Each structure stands twice: as structure tokens, then as C-alpha cells.
Amino acid sequence: MRRRKKRTKPVIFENVEIFETASEGKTIAKIEHLVVFVNKVLPGDIVDIKVFRKKKNYFEAYPIKFHKYSEHRVEQECVHFGICGGCKWRNFDYEKQLFYKQKQVSDNFERIGKVKVSKINPILRAEELNFSRNKLEYTFSNRKWLTEVETKIDGPKQVNALGFHIPRMFDRIVDIDYCYLQKDPSNNIRNKIRDYAIENNMGFFDTRKHGGLLRNLIIRTSSTGDLMVILSFGANEKENIFKLLDYINIEFPEITSLNYVINTKGNDTLFDLNIICYKGNEFIYEQMGDLKFKIGPKSFYQTNAKQAYNLYKIAEEYAKLTGAEIVYDLYTGTGTIANFIARKAKKVIGIDNVPEAIDDAIENSKINNIENTEFYAGNIKDVITKDFFEQKGKPDIIIIDPPRAGIHKQVTYSLLNSNAKKIIYISCNPATQARDVNILSEKYEVIEYTPVDMFPHTHHVENIALLKLKGEE
Image (tube, rainbow, N blue to C red):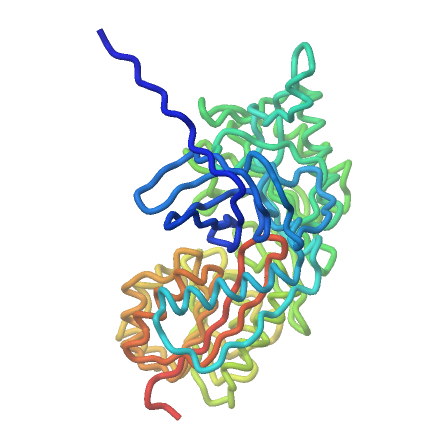
């Protein structure tokens, strides 16, 4: 006869002061010599906490009672705050957000990078705290996260949702009514699509069973007034698909690029799928200074366009181009940085692993009458070999802007072997950036870095670092 597992008494700590921020928007409390990561609190809060996870070196907990609220708390207007997890710091004073983002970068460079930095510049604050993003991705689900009020309603409940994932719950979606991340008509488009789908009994995706018609929605806006919508369907139900697309086209004539894709895979990525333009253009345009950029459905473009412009100006300043340099732009995307600096360089070579993005990068050079750029598609670790450098020209400056995971070790070794005079490293993850800089410190020294707040009301921070080859003037 199996013995019942004995229930352990929950661990609760009382009157705990939160004193620091940590990664992923968590905060830190210390109880004697024990480190406890706590969710949904701010530095300065004094709370009772309940432990939900025990590890060898730390605990994780959540608050069950507040004794004192932090003086850095501010009123926030979003009804979804605290549930969707998209803007964890919306109730945090903005000056304190900047303080901890700056500290996050410094801590990573000191703890992980272990390199001396000659100059640390203050964080560049965001120009807009709301409606700063030009792209949002939503998920359809038949497993809506029910609010406390909804759970108490008698009778059948509406369980279909279109919105964002609940943190740490892959199959639960908070149904978004109004989001402050993207300017109108983003909210209206999302809500009208959801309502139409519910009224017409269209199947919302079931993540557990991996089935259902409606899967994802992407909305891209631009400073030029262009508007792109991409609908991802989990089944090829042509009649229902075209009914929905026709409804969207009639309801929102301002959409300049209406697209759809059939995705029956086990993940939501679209890079390996054929995205079909149903109405309008296959692209939108974005303006940056006096440059115009063409953006396709698969193209990467910085989601905060105004801050991206400021970020690229810092990169240009770090490069100090004279017109004689050969510059390599790795992870070039649609060639925004490459084209931004090309007019001050001898030649710029951009490389990215998404062929469609490279096509757009080439087109962007043509649109802006830039003739000294070259673009190549391929896995960067396989492209930037010694032979490639010899054929295309030894780099004087290398600019890198990789994904959050940082750069592949092989790419790091290629950078070391390039002996470029400067490396300008842009990163959305200071931890992986510091790790890579530590490896590059074999030949390079960090001259300076500048944190940039691309995502206000979140713990995320961009950082741009200037590395110079040791011994170079």
C-alpha cells in the first residue's frame, strides 16, 4: 500500500523588506543569509511572503500581505497590470526604473564581464513612456485567464481570448481590452477581430490539443502611417479565413498590408513559412531621419523606432567614420544600421540569417540611393571566415546587434581573429553581452558604454558598448 505523501507546512516570512531588483523583473529580499526572489513587489515594500520554490542557494516567493508600500510606487492606468506581465514596472517611478536599468548593466559588466570600463555614460531615457512600440504580437486561445469577477459569474463563461500569455503559463491568455504599448488603431483592430471571431464561432487555438483555426495576430505600425496586419491560422479553412480577412479589409481601410499564413507547426515562428499578402502591399515603410526603410512581414526592425534612431546616432558617434573604413554590420536585419552609417564609410557589409530581411536591406539601399553597401544571407558563424574577410575586405569596424542569446562562440573567435580596430556591440541583454565581452577582452578593451531605455515600464534595457583593439590609438 502506497503511503500518502506528507504535506509540508508552507514557509512564510513576515515583515520582509524588499531592497533590490533582479533579473526578469523580480526583486530581492534577504533573510539572514538567505536570498529570496520575490514577484510583484518593488524595492522599499515591506511584506509578508510565501515561498513557492526552494533551491539550494535561494528561494522564490510571492507577497501575501503588504505592511508598507514603497515610496517609489506610482499610480498606473492599465486594467491588465499585474496579470499579463507585459509592463511589470508600470507602477514604478520612472526615475527609479532608469536607476535600476543603469545598475543592471553595470552589475553585469562587473560580475560577468569582469572588465574595466573607461567611461560609463548615463542611461538615455525614453522620449515616450506610452505607445512606444511599432509591433505587437497577440495569441488566440480557447483557455482564457478568468478574472476573479468572471469566476463568480453563474452559467457558461466566455473562454476565448486574444491577448498576451500569463507569465509561466503556456496555455493561458489574458484577454486584452486596451494596451498602452502601441498607438491606435492597434487596440481597435485586435478587439474587432476577436469579437468577429467569437460571433462567427471561429475556433480559437487550443495549445494543449494543438488545434484550432485562429492562432496569432501581429500588428505593425510605422511613422509613415503605414499599417501591417498578419494573421496566423492553425488550419487551412479557406472559407473562414477569407471571410475574416474580407471583414478586416472592409472594417479597416487604413491597413496598407494585410497578410496571412498557415502554421500547423509545433511553434509560433513564421520565418520558415510562406506569408501571403491578401490585400495591399507586401511591405510597409518606416522613416528614420532622412532615410526610408522597407519592412516585410519577416523583417526585424527595432520596435521602438524613436529610441532606435537615438541608438544608431550613438553607434555612429562611436564609429567616428572618416570615409575610409570598411564596416561589417552583423545581424543587420533590414540593413537599418548599415544604411544609417554607409554615407560616412567607404563600404558597409551587412550579414543576416534571414534571406527575406537581406532582400529588404538591398532594397533599402536602393530606395535611399546608397551604393556602397553589400548584403549577404547566411548563418553568421559560417559566413565571416578568414576567406570571406580576404575576399570582401578586412574590417576596420564591426557592429554587432545579436538576439538576446548573444553571439555564437564561433562568431566570437572570428571577431578576435578579424583584428578590427573597433567593435561596437549593441545588445538587448546585458548579461550575454557581458559574457561575450569577457571573451573579447583577450584582444579588446571596453572604452565606454551607454545604456538606452528602449522599453519603458519593463526591466529590459538596451546597451551599446565601444570596444577597441588593444594597442590601437
